[in-house]
Image (tube, rainbow, N blue to C red):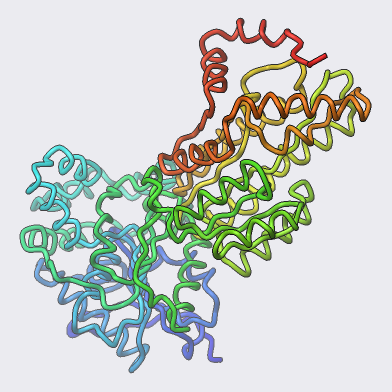
Length: 582
C-alpha cells in the first residue's frame, strides 16, 4: 500500500488546477469537488475521516483557491468544468473509474458529468451533497407552471433569492467587496450555519473566489433554466445527501431525482447546507459505504421511493419493521397490519414461542426472544437485527405490563419492574434502533405505545399511568430531536382494549385468589367493550402514514384527552373515584 498526502497542480489546457491527494494511490479513487464560495479545504474534515485505503483527490475548481482564474464567463461552462475533471482523473487515476463526490456547485457539476455520455466508463458513482440537478430543478419548475401552480413555483424559489444578485453583472463584486467581508462570512458560518470554522478562515482569497465563482451561475443557470436537458439520465449509481436544515436549497428541488437517477440512494442529514463541515464523520462514512457497495457490485437495484414523513401508508411496502411485545395483543395485531401493507416484519417478545408461532403465520416474518427490560439483551438484539437484516425503518416499541393498586401498596420492586419494562424498554428501543436509523440517513418512523392513562390520572393506576405519561413525553421530545433526520415519532394512546395485559396485570396488596378474580373481571369488561387490538393496529398504521405525533385511540381515550386539555379539574375529580371492583 502506497500512502501519501501531497499537493500538486494539474494542467487542464491553459488552466492550472491545485490538487491535494491523500491515502492509498492503489485504492479506489474518490474525487471531491467543492462548492461556492469554498475551496478544496472545505473537505479537510471529511478527508481526515475517510479510511486511508481510498485514494482521495480534492482540487480547487477554476476561479477558486490556488487554481487559475480565467476572466470570461464562457470559461466556466459545464463543458470546460468537465475538461478539468477529466484532466485531474487522467493525471492522478489514469485508466481507472473514479467515484465523484460534490457539494453545492461541485454537486451541480457532478450531476452534469454523471449524465454526460463522454463520462461513461470514467465515473463509477456519484455522491451529491446539498446539490440538486439544475436540469431537474428547471424541469420541475416548468411542470408546475404548466399546471398553473404559480404560487408553489414561487415558494420553491424562496430560499434561492441569492441567485438573482449573483446573476446580475457587477452585483457579485459589490456584494463581496462591500457587504460580505471575510470576517462576516466566518461569523455567518459559525453562528448561523453552526459549523466549525478554523482560525485561518477567512482565507485571503475568499472575495476573489466568490467574485470569480459567480460566473458559474451566470454562465450555466440561465441556459439550463431555458433549455433543460429532459433526457439527462444518470448512467452511474447516485447517492443524494439532503441536509434538512438547508437555508439555501428547497427540498422540492430534489423531487425528480428518482426519475433521472434509476439507481439512487437518498440520505437525510440533520444539518445545514455545509454538511461536510458540520457532519464530517457521517458524510465520510456514507461515502465509504457507498463506494464499497459500488466496488462490490452493489447498488444495481432500481431506486426505491424515499421515505416521506406523512407520505401515506403505501410507502410501508418492502420496508423493514420491528415490533416488540409482538407475541399477542396490540403488538401481534400491528405486526399483521404492517405485513398486510407489504412490510417485512421482525417480531420481538420475551415469549419466544409465542413470537415464533406468529412468525409462522406471517410470510417472511422472523422472530426474536428478548426481554426489553434487559439492556444487554436489547443490545444483543440490536446487533443481531442490524447484522442480519439491516436497519428497520419502522420501529414499534409496544412491550409493556400492568400493575394496579394504590400507590402506598405498590412496593419499590414493583416500581422497578414496571419502569424497567414500560419505560426503559421503550428507551432502549428508541436509542438503539433510533441511532441506527439516523446513521442510515433514510428516514423512518418510531411508534411508542403509551395509553390514555398517560393523561388521565387514576387512583388505582399510579405506577402504570406514570410510566405511560413518561412514554408520552419521551415521544414528544424524541420527535423534536429526530425531525431534522426525517424520522417521525408517534405516541399511541389506546383506551380500554381487551388484550393479554388485562390477564397478566398485577394487583398489589391482593392475594392470589383475589388477583385472579380481579383480572377475570377486568378482562370480561374489556371484552364486552369490544374494541379489538386489530382496530388499534389499523389506527397505528394510519398514524404512521400521516406522521401524527399522537394517536389517541378509542372514544374514551379521546374524551380523556379533551378533558385533560380543556377541563383538567373535572378529570382530577374523576380520578378520586375508586373504580376497583369489590
